[in-house]
Image (cartoon, rainbow, N blue to C red; front, side, top):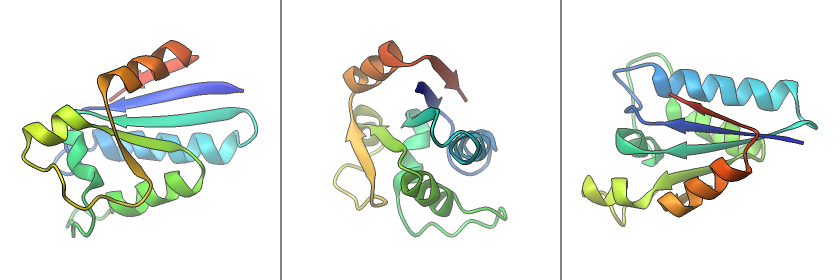
Length: 118
């Protein structure tokens, strides 16, 4: 099984980088169910994507996309240092998203067959 790690740094809205990363993750999971494991790691402003109940005007909903990826059995982790730096520690997060460290990301990258950044 091929392991693909997707790392995202941009905020969930205002840029389409996270949106496109999630689209890719969903598509990989749909096309290669038995052959690919997709893991998503959120850094910098991308960590704000794990906050539930955001109501964007952009025409797409990041929470819904994250919930699809989690339902597809992908792991979604977000940086604890980044969430703390933004004063968001202790807030409710989307179910299935996991607080993680740079050690976790380093482990994923070392085990991954491919790492993609957005």
